[in-house]
Image (tube, rainbow, N blue to C red):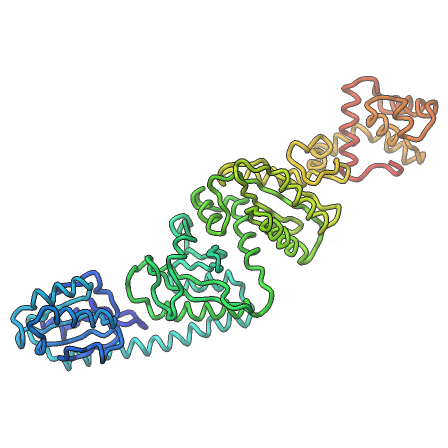
Length: 540
């Protein structure tokens, strides 16, 4: 059965060429460079010259009978060095004309330079080899041109409809079937599409690995891991890089992958030139939400992703901060940008982004010996300056590992939700600041509490409604004064005699003894629930 042709749009490899009937008749045997047989063959070149590099451009499979080969081993090595330096795909030597056996010096030279060397024990028609292989190459080039037009159409359509950078990165990964990373010039991973792979093995120690892979003038494998890298620009010049992590190390890049990466990089550049792009904030927001909702597969995954974005998760104390505000539109995004810059200017490492409407999340990473309170106060002051007095900053407990940060987020969120205008004014709040009024405010929608408050106070509220009375405010003043009638009368703005009469009426209507600490506590809880619901009687 004849071998299957190479995948459409891809140049045939040396392995695929050796499986063609026109070459299997020659009984090919690999003598050197076996690990490089998946190199792409871009052309077949027949030559008997000792200086073949002058006629090669790279990627050619050289066919020779060895007729002009010198006896001098050093010249054989020079010949192989020329092939390796120009990037020839490999060398095939037909026995019988010049050699009965390929010289050991030639085999050693090819092994030293990792150049694939194949001997043909039987003669073959070189013209048949070139015609067959060139037909495959031309078919592949035609398919690649057609595929290139399809790829161009895909990214043009995405650009015209203003696709997000996340969608462009995702499309690049889908088209290539390989993980794709978008990084900025400081080697922070802003976006990535790993196609279901875990983060930890792909993006761990990213900055170090990325610096080892320079951006080449021509799109080609770069660095020790063989990444394909395309530059992304903005109005100011180079902005970042789009990186394709192909798993096939030290091999010729797939031409279709090169096309996809080039088109994707152009689309990303167009997206940045089209207008202001808060890509770093988008990246921070995405990671913060994933941490809060525990979407990462493992703590190692979470740590690798956070560190790839520039947050030192190991050896630091981590704090979740939630900013609650009532502003709308893009004000939240602008604030998180200013907070991030302010923290960076003071040397604080943090992720900062709008996590939900009316919510900005900040994940602080502080050295173990650092005091977190001054940083939290700085955030609180900035939030008040930008968002007004209604802004609330809440801080969850510190943790030493990202596996515990979700609980810290929940604490900060619950604390921010509990704080009311009646709470003591502070630059920031912690869970310990949530006392009974704040707790009841959080639980105000619980129907059990609502029924409890109604049972305790309904007679008093109905009396005030019928008589335009002020018994509920009088009770509130009494409870606020912890049962001190003189203080309560002043709070209520009444004479002692008038106030004492109202207390007597309250006891009679409710059937309660206001001197009882337990009954006073029960009534105080009911009043706080009523206040939290915002349904107190007029005049209260």
